[in-house]
Length: 406
Image 1: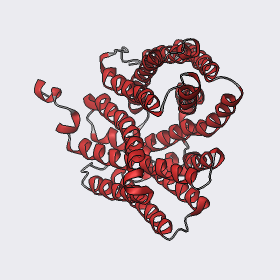
Image 2 (image 1 turned 90 degrees about the vertical axis):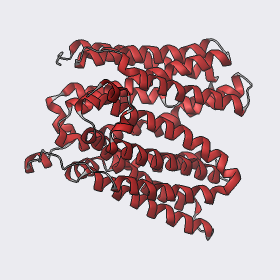
Image 3 (image 1 turned 90 degrees about the horizontal axis):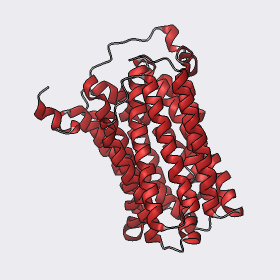
């Protein structure tokens, strides 16, 4: 590959990666818009924190409850057909929501049921997407492909949340839901144009029956890494609950300040995502684990700072640094997983990874939400920081006991 081609962004020189990126951006941005719109609808129709929490739990259950079925199905079928099927199913569910909403018959239970089925489609979509990225990108472009995948998820979540909040006032909740339905159709069209050759491997009947956990017994460090990240998410994700309280109670700020601080996280993730390629790990598993420990250390310090120093500008810098650490960590570890996990097991592995990461969300939101009611937000930040710092030591220890291999 010549130097000019290497300088050209991957999605501009790889047609399949462009299509995968387009489909991912549209579907995930539309989903985030939908979540914001439905959460606002719940709040404005008499619901409170409990109802919003239950709505979020409904969206977190499918990835965990159906992890075995999802993983094996993604491994068994071509990525292209799975992505298209997920988009079309999500479109059908969203259209039902549109019809019920227009007839004023949706109700809270209907919103939760629809949220469950949309999350179920997403639970199949995400591991199929990771599998498709590995199939579409040549080995030398794998890290760049993972960077685009990770950054797209961050951008889609940020842009979807911002667009959803703005569009609610302009076109209404129903209009946002209709836009979400259209995003699924366009995403299905993009995925239908994919030209990914069938995988060369074929799983044996014995391998078809193997679960992801059983397959990981041969590489126990992978299991330990997934458990470690699940614990990290338990302490880290509640920042989305604590941040509004910190801005309002501790800083006495406005919604504008809240938006600026949330933007700092996403900007940091993007910077870390595209800067990850400049950080060398020696091409070894233990090298990536040491980098992960360093990223956890930076995350812990970034959470500790606002617990001691109550200043909006300093909080912005801390959140940006935390985002950078997350961006680097995501790219390096997902690339490592793509390289180390056997192709015929990737669907099961990424489904399991998704389940472990999302499982902590409801419990973390609930428990840290309770903590925020009995103590000041800065103190909650310190508790989060101590948890992440302890896990930094866990990853460092894991790097020392894991076999070094290229």
